[in-house]
Length: 111
Image 1 (cartoon, rainbow, N blue to C red):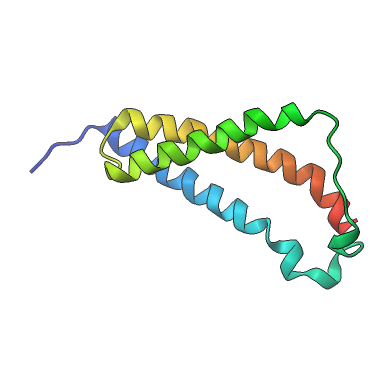
Image 2 (image 1 turned 120 degrees about the vertical axis):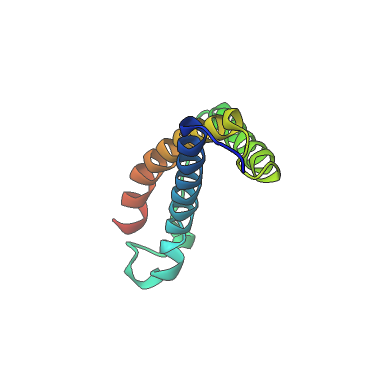
């Protein structure tokens, strides 16, 4: 019988919770495709323009690091506390980023 610390148990719980929350937020992005009739205008006529394309590098790195940390954490089955906390921090930043993105895009889509 292994004796796990309280920090390990908390990090494992928080990592799983935040990953599931992030996946739910990604599924929430499918709402415009499900509720096509309730959008302000057809999605084919909705455009988003970004002045600075370099602004996509850091969110891309954040998503890439999320997938790398998720694979490493799942490979070790949430047994390494440091990986759990790194994944939790990365996922929390991604959740904040995705919520900010939704706040900007949903008024464009749903009017």
